[in-house]
Length: 156
Ligand code: MN
Image: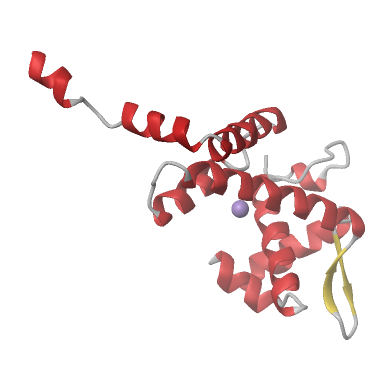
């Protein structure tokens, strides 16, 4: 699974490669550049791991190293990074509807984001939009999901 990226037969990056692309894109957007040391500290991995992943991502055509500018994403790298980012945002939008705390959201999104098919993500995006546009339905659902209701427990 982790070698998917290195194989030309596979068009999509592996899940950890996706994390790198996403973070590199974020760093470039925030600071204008992405240094190996910053990537390492924000992903909590060793610099040597970053260097080797950066090399693989470079070989697969997602990024390149330019003298004076440092790491930059190629057009293909940016496209993929934006999709990864968009998917993350969709999941955040969806999870934040239900009052889950930020840490639970963060952990659960990290756990599933690389495993969902585009079709499933699209459904979750529609569902998020549906609830956003129908707050009264969201409230109904929130009440529905709130464990045993007083009337129900009163009857037993
Ligand atoms: Mn993410």
